[in-house]
Image (cartoon, rainbow, N blue to C red; front, side, top):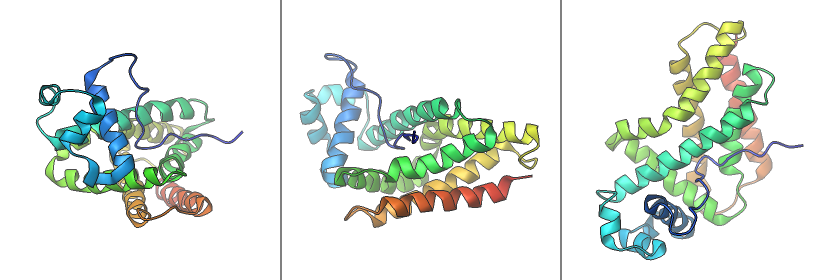
Length: 216
């Protein structure tokens, strides 16, 4: 049975009933990015989609950048949890790390709807911008995924299958390579769908590059 990989920019399940208003705002932003990209993501549109008053937004966020960071934080933590479940079934650190690297590419790029390309491109553009303007908050959002990667690297070093190196540094280098490549492809695909076979080929090429860099 083929593995179903989580989308890098996925979100937790919708809240029950009225639910958590913060999550309602985050999900509204996510849906608007699906439909219209960054141009459609305005505070007024988010409030209209969530069915909340302006006060509800500013009780939780200072502005649109804070909302976008919350989208990153929620979606990346969800992806990390899903990858943790996937890698728990892997035979060892090599297979686990391969699942994460290829999964980031296939899970994020392997979407059939145009909205996924539009949303992915928008969040990729924001990721690059926030890495310069809000690096500490963006790094905080990335921590769960980076810690997961570092854990598998550390296990591989301990078993002698990966060369001795700082697992946290290796995790960040691997993530930066994979995510930068994904962002570039998503921006190029913003106007149309991509070939799934090409995505899978890209995922395997990236994994092979990472594997050769860390094997003992």
